[in-house]
Image 1: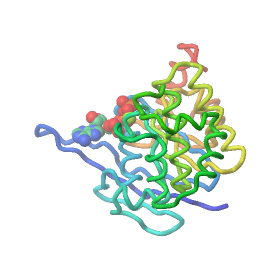
Image 2: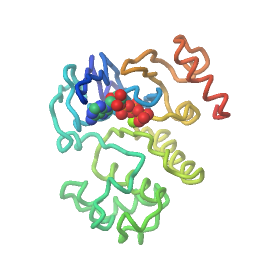
Image 3: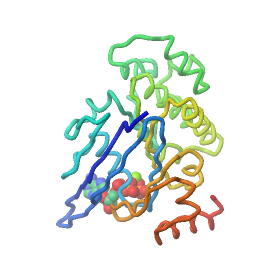
Image 4: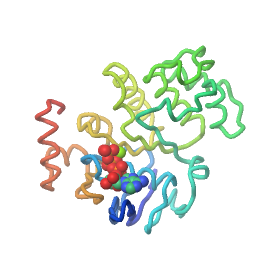
Length: 248
Ligand SMILES: Nc1ncnc2c1ncn2[C@@H]1O[C@H](COP(=O)(O)OP(=O)(O)OP(=O)(O)O)[C@@H](O)[C@H]1O
Ligand SMILES: [Mg+2]
């Protein structure tokens, strides 16, 4: 076990209509193998931007990214796909609508043909084999998200970047997906960054958490410690409002 993924002083500005927005300012993090790192913060605080930079969908203005100690700054999503996969809120739109699941999943394996591995992964997420013949439009949101987990693991990636992955799901599907994530974590096969606005989910699955505000990391530490004894005023406020909503 060691550090599998690292970001050092990541910066990103966007120019929109003459305005310059600092979406991310000097954000650093490290992810240990087998660890789930939570990222919380209000809307617009830079959580998705951080994941987009890590995955190579966007490039940082400056800062460095490392996978197993090797610099991969500047790589695009095609290359980073070998070691990390994104899971979005809207899993269906991450699949080609014209393709049956089987094909999308096989393609993620870069030519590897291993139907037994796909069957094993399907069992792991509790999906029937016959669903492999369906296109994304004919699956429920929860089934699609579970297929996305299958695809991510079939690709051979060792890191999952989850951006509000359960937000679009009903309570039952959300619980199913979180149970799968929890199981993967217990097996030690999950290294992930888990972005969510739901403090309860974060406190259940994340070992450590970082709190973002206005593109900066205001606090970072052991999840339960941060939730019970927030050092930063903004974190206190965030947890307080989650409690008021009856989430925590
Ligand atoms: N492509 C872009 N062009 C211009 N501004 C952008 C772009 N992407 C993000 N931003 C801005 O950067 C800031 C951070 O956005 P980001 O999507 O990372 O926030 P977030 O924390 O994921 O929010 P949410 O919880 O609503 O998903 C916001 O002010 C957003 O408007
Ligand atoms: Mg976002």
